[in-house]
Image (cartoon, each protein chain N blue to C red):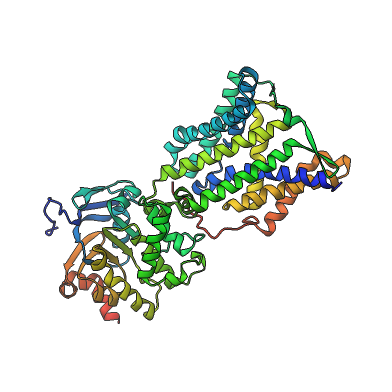
Length: 297
Length: 252
């Protein structure tokens, strides 16, 4: 049924996926690295929510803020101890490192917490709905849309009007040249990892609000969504990430209502067929980029 | 080499002393020494593969030196990070143009200015002034990816100037330009060193441009210095004639 409820839910899902994809692309744009540990940042955010909501008296808004900060600092920390030492070596080394970081973080969660799913205590607002034009819309979806709007505006302002922003854009365009002009590589890369971590932290809140549980393997599905969304939209552009996130959400939602019930469990398979079709016609993704493809660490 | 300058680095110049760069067995640079003063235009010439671009890459920190030293105004910058070298006062352009293609012309120049610690506002102001000087302010709001080739070169030079360098390296600035464009470039370049009080090093194969522009020439072949002096002097050095100018002059 394509009605108002469907539309709002799809926009909400698209907003979530857009944030997800942005966090992946911001690093890819500069380092040409698909950070496979990105999903684990979401997992780390999730466990922060679980621990603080279960064992601390802090108000929920504060807990959510802390989850975002913990994801951000984890991201910065992985860059500092894992990626920075191998950055000058090769892209392959970075890629393998990202798998290592991902495995380490997952196993850390297995060891320290538990392999079993933990229930996250969510605030009331995530379980209630509001009536809009005769349809019941979960607050969760409205909050997702609002958060991603705020983030898009903030990110745009940062990129357009700040010193860091113009350095980030230049670095995404041609990192070597940016360094030659006097921009310290570490500053730009740290900033990108920080933004990526913030996105992961925000996503963790809304991702977990759907299932209300957190597991060590939580990071895998969002990573896959982020990766596919960026492939659809174009790996090289932030606009592409947003477009890719929304296209993914729209297609997967449409498949959900259009497929006959017997085929619903193959929804992802149909999704990937669609991705393949897009890539056949636009191998560079929907939003292509004119920037150079070289990478120097 | 007989002409190695004294070990005492000059305090108002770029000094390169015994610079070597080996790629495994290949000696791309083999003990090159020279200095470049403020206000001067030095031409670095030599046949293809003689080590000119390697020299620029090593001095600007893109490649590590095997041995040898580089000083800017008496401070050593050998093997420093690219941004530190930029801070020390070195800027360059590339043989293959490397503009930020998704940024506007103005933004391209702004990046260089903010990287030297200016605020966005001050950077914009400096970028506007430099585009004016180089004569391309008409295109400032255009995306770099849609510029005609000849203008791209000038944006690169403007961008390099925005870091307010003490020394500017231009790697084949006239490559791919037609006669008119080359002539315009010559006009732009010739006034820069005196106006900005910077030393300029030019690598190019356009001998007409080099001979008219440069105060001094330094000639490389197989990574070694085979001659140096004024354009008139260099023309008379037999090794140079044989390795490089001889063929070119004979061919024209």
